[in-house]
Length: 335
Image (cartoon, rainbow, N blue to C red):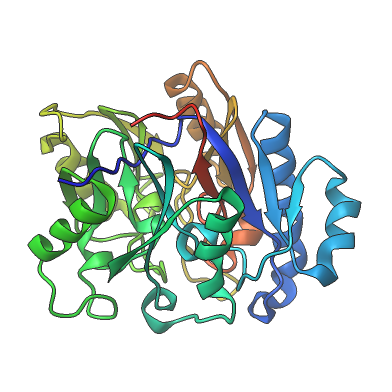
């Protein structure tokens, strides 16, 4: 049995990072992505989170002009803003935080940026935390933890031939148990339509707290993910966590059909929220369900301020707030 535990994201954190978008792949969406990143990090700081931002030297003055001294700047090497996946998965052992680095192959070989390999050791260095290697291709956005040994993921992601060919679910579960202390792995099948991450779970279901999971309900008959969302709820209704509990399952309205410039559905999700201090920050996309979804999440987090912020610019490259953040455990977190 591993000596590690992955804390739930509501537990205290010592640093909450994002990174300043800069890659050429953004094209004319770069300005919007930067504006949303700045708004997100300002909201994190305002909510009392220890907000930090990775920025290239040549971008530091622009970032300072936008954010002032509200957010600490770390001039580390990084590929682009997707720190949930290029950065480490944070666990703790008896000595404190541990940065666990899985093998990263650019989301199945789709996007490989210079600098990606430097993120995990860079963040571990800032935290003066040990870096441990895990022999599995995986990304942080594909792994959802309850803080008590339960992990949710998808077959489309971890069992994809573009990541871990030849491995069975049992092989993956053994690695997750060793690397992260996962005592029970709950497998969903597929993720959202056109999600280039191949089914990342942070677009599908999140632990509000141990025992309570939040997933989405179709926005309406034209929701391109209606069948997937209903199947996820059925799996969760039957699931049992590492403590032997059946889940309480709450459903929040999906954004529904959010189209790219060519009319194809984007993987928009209200589940890609981030916990920040005393706030829950929810990406919104101008969908008719926005107010209903934010209100439903506020009911689930009565001790937090749930706020919707635009994530439409970041979605142009397929992600949102959880995808672009990475949080290291605080000193108050115990094994």
